[in-house]
Length: 148
Image (cartoon, rainbow, N blue to C red):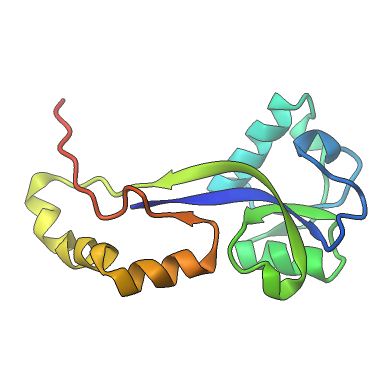
């Protein structure tokens, strides 16, 4: 369907100079709840940066918006979240990775997804999604056959 950009949300001016996951030790980090995909990503990024995930503390929240609001309100120093929507909260974004979002369906179910595929080809819909920022629609609306 599309790709979305994930990165570190920091207050305007990035007062702590956070440049990546390696800077999160000792910081209050707003995190998604255990089991959420963004939490898994954060833990993977921390391990790859030689930071033990259990050494990172902060509130566990249930949405990307809650993460952004926690940083904007000063409840957390930083959080992993989406680029989309942070401008209104006066946050800055430290880009880390792009995530692909795909739908896997059996051939018999392809008819049910046709309205979504059509919408992803509609220029107005595409422009609206791209205006949000942090989304890549380069492959959006494509249908690929996968053979076992």
